[in-house]
Length: 393
Image 1: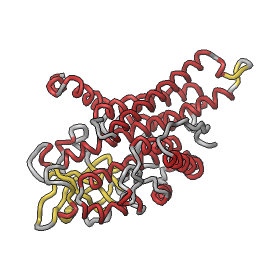
Image 2: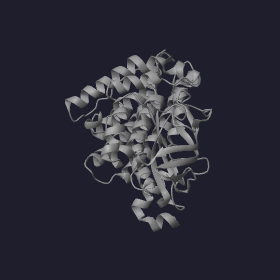
Image 3: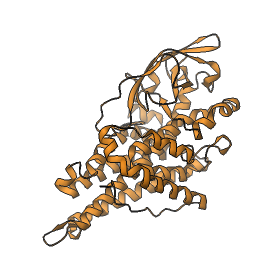
Image 4: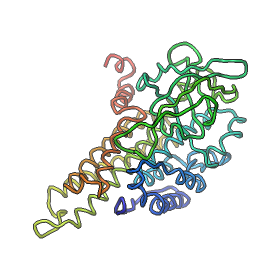
C-alpha cells in the first residue's frame, strides 16, 4: 500500500516560482519516491537514481547561487521542498539536507576559483556529497576531533576516521574537518575531498533502527593526499565553517521532521476515518479526536517555527537560537506524532503492513543528528543567559 494518505499542505509561498517548485517536488515524491519507500527501506536500498533525478530537476542545489547551477531560492522555500520530500521518504529528504550541508563550506567560504571549478557539478551535475565532522571519540564535543591534515609541500595528507557519516562510502565528495594545528577549535581546517581519492574508504554501513536505506558509515582516511587548492577558507577556520553549516543544517533537520510528522498524521487521520468500532468510525471518539488535534497543532507550530528561523536567515539576521529551537521542537514533535500514530492504528500500527511503525523508528534519529536535542537546549540557554551561565549551568 502507499506510504501516506496524501493531504497537501496549504502553504504560503513568496513567488509563483516557489509554488512551481513545491508542485514539482510533490509530483516527484508521489510518483518516484513514496511508492517504493517501504520496500526499499526494508531491503536497505539507497535510491541513488532519485538523487540523480532531483539534481536534473534543479532540486539538489536550491539555496545556492544560480551562477553555479543552484536554484537561488530563499531558505523559506528550500525547507518546504525538503518537507515534501521527507514526507514521502525520510532517506531522501534527509539526504538532500545532508548534501546541502556538504555544499555550504565551498559555497560560502570558498574562493571564486574554487566555486567556479567545483560548485556546478556539486549543485546540478548529479554529484552527491557527505559532511565529515563527527568521529568515534568526538560527537557533541566536535572541537576535540583527531583526524589530522599535515602539510607536505603543496599538498595536505589526511589521516584519521570520521564516524556517523550519511552517504559514507558512496558520496562523490566529502567536506572534511581535520586538525591542521594545535588542540581545540582554532586548530581545525576544512577540505573538499573527492570521493575517489586514494586512501579514502568507507566502512560497512551501520545497522540502524531506522532509515535503513540511507547508508551511515565510518569513513577512513589513510594518507589521503589533497592539494592545498582544495582547502576551504583559511587555516584554522574550519570549526567556524562547520558551526555555520550546522546552523543551517539544523533547519533542514527541522523541516524533515515536520514532513515525517505530517506523513504520520495523514496516515492516522485516514485510518481513523475508515476504521469502524462500536458501529461508527473511531475518529468519532473524543479521546482519539483530541490526539489528532494535538498532533496537528504541534506540527503547525513546528512548521511556523522553522519558517520563522528561515526568514531570519534569508534577511541576513542572526538565527542560530531560532534554528536550535526549531530543531528541538520539530524533532520532538516528530517523535511524539509517530508514537501517537502507532497508538491510533493499534495492533495494525505495530505491523509493517502500515508505515507508521517505520516512521516511529525513523523519527528517533532526528533527535540525535546534527546536535542532540540536549545540545540544542544548551545552545538556546547560552543565547538566553550568556556563555558564563551556559558553562556553569
